Image (cartoon, rainbow, N blue to C red; front, side, top):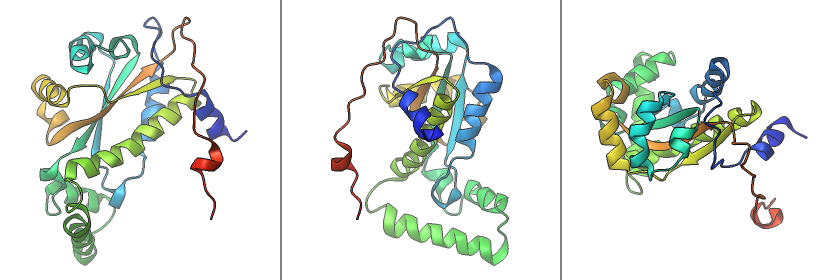
Length: 215
């Protein structure tokens, strides 16, 4: 079997983690490397990844996440933050920095900035706001995190069940400004090892030929 498919067959939304097991540091760093190199629209990387292993901090976060046990029982909790309108403005320092990091300068940098600006104002904003669009990019990184974790034999559980305003407020109050800045929570992902008592439910999907059509 294709190695990626094999990993994805292993992956499921683990609802019960073994709190006694911890992901080795080398493994969690490799998993987050997959997030770091994930693709994004225009290559703008509108994200930041907070990898929370501190159990006391996760205990404080748990009530803001519908009191789900995965928040505290997992080994590491990845909070994916997405950039908001200020830093995603075409003329922002952040956009300039990203374009310069890709080797753009002079006319090429300005052409790229204006192309992005045209997309934002003409194609994007009539249909969704910047936060919604940037969050879509974060879900690409989320998928890569879960796939990389599965390939390493690590379980995962993507979590959207949380108070967005509550978690945003908590993180902005609790953490240094350079960690949160012009950022807002997009999605959360618990990583760890399934509890010995946890039985993976049978995966249910609509028929392949109904969902996948070759033209």
